[in-house]
Image (cartoon, rainbow, N blue to C red; front, side):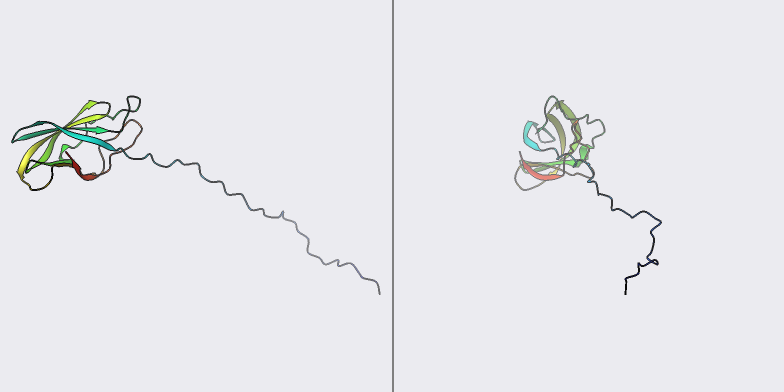
Length: 137
């Protein structure tokens, strides 16, 4: 007996579906944060402390303006006194001068701290300063 072709085979009227290749998104990672390189006391009396804080910025990518910066995010401890920020000023492309006012006696090593919530210090590349505590003076 001869084989009879199957005339009832299903006919596809629709094209076959093809899987699309997934394309990886080309989003860039957020820039790394600013880094404090040094902090030095430039003026001190019993009521006022001025500290120059130097960052890892360059003249081509300087610190951004600090007109909206909140000085209260800065605190320090120096020679047995606690200090709270009252003024932040841009000194140079890589330096902020933070002026702090004495609050009360505070034991511990001389240090400066920054409370980030959210950061108000950045450079022209968009890198922001993250919170830190106890940076030595």
